[in-house]
Length: 303
Image 1 (cartoon, helix red, strand yellow):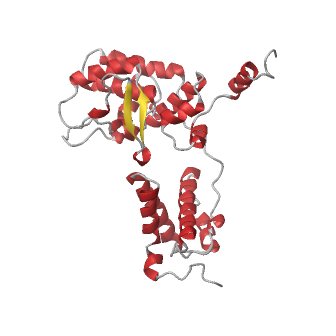
Image 2 (cartoon, rainbow, N blue to C red):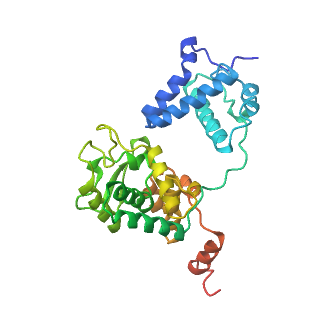
Image 3 (cartoon, rainbow, N blue to C red):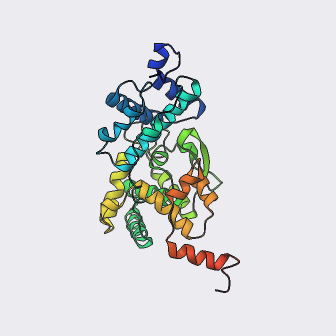
């Protein structure tokens, strides 16, 4: 059987994963966390089947058994990393073929993230505002965190890592550095700006981050943000397991779409490079879609 690898040196073949990750960083601007995730996925596959760069279809097919216990989302992520890896090898001439069609197929996509109702969102805000009336530092900070997660749709990492320099002075926008170091402008509502003003008056005067940690150089962690949100949910009478930063970001997107927001605008607000991601991330119930077509489409009018 012909060697699928072209006449490349062993050193180049052996460092194929490193070359791929370097390309992802240099040409696609992938963030450090993304690079680390790709490395873990590729190295775990290599541990399971041996030399990844030289693996054939049979070897990749055997991953179905090795990864049988993975959630569909994890399997999909790993397979995506491998497909991109083999596409890179093919483009670079390190391989003469692409064995990735033999990769296992993930099961049906998992359900969309849990979504909080408007009533549950209101209950969380009511509780946060009630507690913030005390003007205690933790309570005011919690209100600002909630306002920016649900009011601006920030990712958890974007929120906790906000520098003070991102806070608006006159214009009602935050400057966000998202995935791949891509910057975008995110609008801040009037009520969020009021909460931010209250927080800036109380915020400990240390560090460069909007939400500093006790360490002078650090900021609030994503894990701590997750804990704070669940604690607030419990105090608001909502099952804590229903709430996370991602759930609030999803609620932001879905409720905006329900209110008539354009999908392209939503894509910009969420910081998605591909609108297909926005289409998957958001959803509207089928009854509302039918009503929208009947109300807005020329053929639906008068029915």
